[in-house]
Image (cartoon, rainbow, N blue to C red; front, side, top):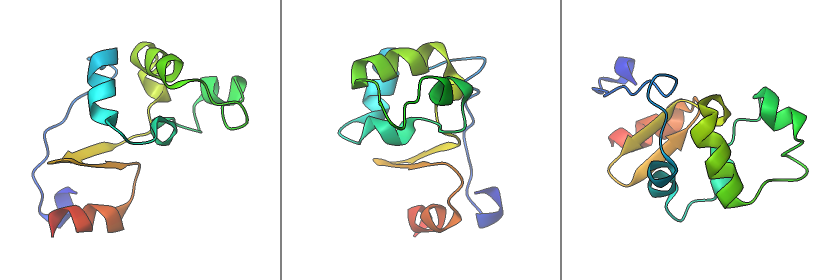
Length: 94
């Protein structure tokens, strides 16, 4: 995003994990499963691809294990982009 000329405010989820309330607000009506990081060990161990947790359980797990959240999370106004997606970043800026 920086190379696209955007200024970013950074939030280190490892040092300041999001609360369950903050995660629910961030997700809004979006599919919570998009926020789960399939590369995370807990995700793979629990076979979340085959048996996704409920939204309540997923939010609880993500608030306690921030690495379970797909990153980066880029928020601009009411739009959220998860993961490295340069095309989506460009759309946010235009």
